[in-house]
Image 1 (cartoon, rainbow, N blue to C red):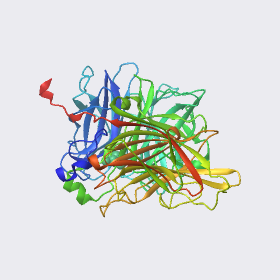
Image 2: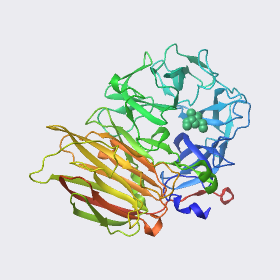
Image 3: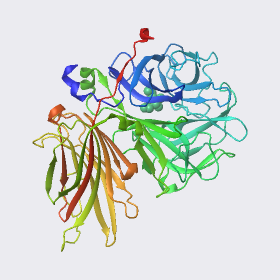
Image 4: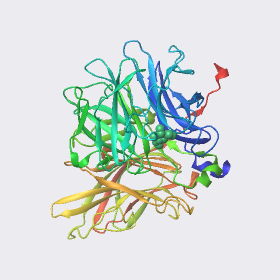
Length: 534
Ligand code: DQQ
């Protein structure tokens, strides 16, 4: 539909038409990255959930393959829902576990295998004759039992699979043991649970190095390793995580900081982001994270345009060794292969209350890195403060300042990504990292909110952000990815050649000096693959 063509992204993953939600079963196989996605083949709204399938050599350019799993058995007739892949280290077999929604909407777990492991594209999938392999256990509601994780191997030689659930408002993770992925034993305790958090969807559980940037195989345990537990909360529609310690003998995970437990502490992304999933990329020894960016316009618009939602740029994820409690998410290095024209600004001075245009031509496809140096204007003293809530227009002593992405020349549309340092006591400053969508679109019925969070600034770190702009997506990484905000915006004027980039400083008492590196980004190749070309 040409009417909404400018909302299509150029280098984020999205099918050509129809509805998509979260990823399932990402993995690397014989030179190809595979992703599967929740897909409605018939409409731009959720329903008829089927597994779309795409492959890539580099996580950037994708060939969209035929549907991998369709709802065609009683145990998944209402939908082939989210699942995860496990590769057996000995026989190389791939065990794909997924949730099926049955005719009466009961959630059951099922198993599938590639029909031919020698096929690098894994085109055909076979469902196990043993399906369903798990039914909701006693005490668990039939609609509260979904999204099996990648399995990890325990010290007793048995595999563990975690499945998210709840008992009333107690959000929790069940653990099953298996040696063949067909018969399972439910443990008599939860891996973890948090009161008041409700249903845990798309649970993810994986090890991270305390010191180091390499990713770890999902089964890794031992010295110098922590474990991340993530749940997508049905109640908040956000992905919450915490870093903690896993006891592989007792199969218990404990958060390092109970005050900042799963669901009441940190989030992967403070913008529009849900149903994420990681996998271990053995090829490059890194853990890769993807999340789903749902629309924030109306269902009516989605039906008109004939498609809905996208995926984030794949990000590596590691523990932040400086704080020990945060994660650092960063766009995979392969994204840099899309960089075209380069613009470098050594030191742009942005005085209090000013906006500075950056003359870089069209600003719809960009990779921006910006470093901010803040200088108190002599004689001034930092004053009364607030946080993200007031957006980019509310002035305070030390902020906000940042960039205006997807802005038109007259600044009638703009999406500010900014820092707001706040003097909390005489010698403490708390900094907030935010994206203000309130003026991102002249269209009436789209989300107009300010996203954000406080962001730790450690030692003598400069304030720095990286922002990926892609037509209707602004994906922002603060302090090396310690905080991330994905924003879905719908400019009507700041499109194609009319989109501009500016710097702004709405602080009253500081000058800001900005160092920038900006690349115009090429489009990625993301197309259906004509199999008759094989
Ligand atoms: N969506 C899937 C479920 C999952 C939810 C169904 C997350 O498996 O719990 O499409 O958005």
